[in-house]
Length: 363
Image (cartoon, rainbow, N blue to C red; front, top):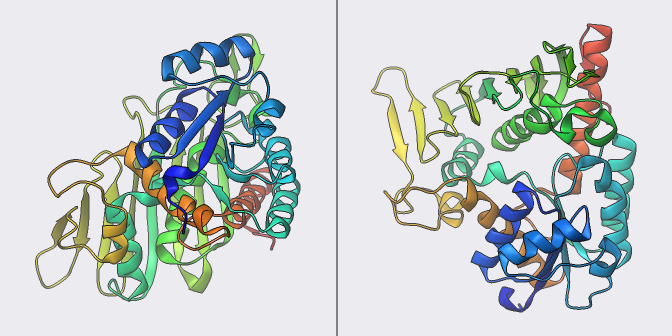
């Protein structure tokens, strides 16, 4: 297997998440060749801050033979065309979520990616908190007993006020769903991953509390409450919101099994609560010495040295770049198949809210 340090990458997108991609890649030792932004001027400014080169265009980046992997961290409406172009240029692709703005687009990308034989990944990085990787293994080996119920939330406040603005508010750029697609999809992907069960049906209630922002009529949701049915009869309930005061980035869930339960919150990422009946409940603190193999693989620092959001990107990319180094798609990371599956769930959410009824996920 080639050393990861020999692999060249480039990042499309110079906003907050694009910079996180760059920093995580550098910490792994990947050679970041440059970035491309929404304009040559913006890319040049951000590239100077990062000590990198700026490409004049996405096409110029694809033409660079030193770039083997393209990271797409651009607005949602660009994902389909950019990922398609990168695959056609024989580049491995890591794409931000959602994979596209329609399931037709995501199905097209999945087909092209699988035909290409290239590595393809979707940036569901939140799976990669070490205690969650440990929990995935624990659930898989029956450590909670038969899973019955999943509940939780993903809450933020960054769009609380009428004058708050982002490209995500424009459905032409972000897609028809906003809070559910942007953050709710992370929660649904994570719980599907942890339980090993896909979502089969949804009952969704979407709410737009702020009807107008900066003179624009709002058609996407500020918040949503969704009932979920997973494979095997597991039931779920999620609340997601971008207008919850004081909640900056609070993702929380509880998984109830027949024997034990597990609960976690992103604001205390090194702690996993394990609930029992008939004996004391416990809190597992992230420590490679006491976690299973899945948890240890995602851990970078000794116990007691807090790991956070940035490390999840590093752990995800370590798995992706192992596959790149080996020259073919491999296990251990979310692929375009996972991204397409979430697009099908989002389709069902939108239809359910419109028709006010349970809707099965089409597969």
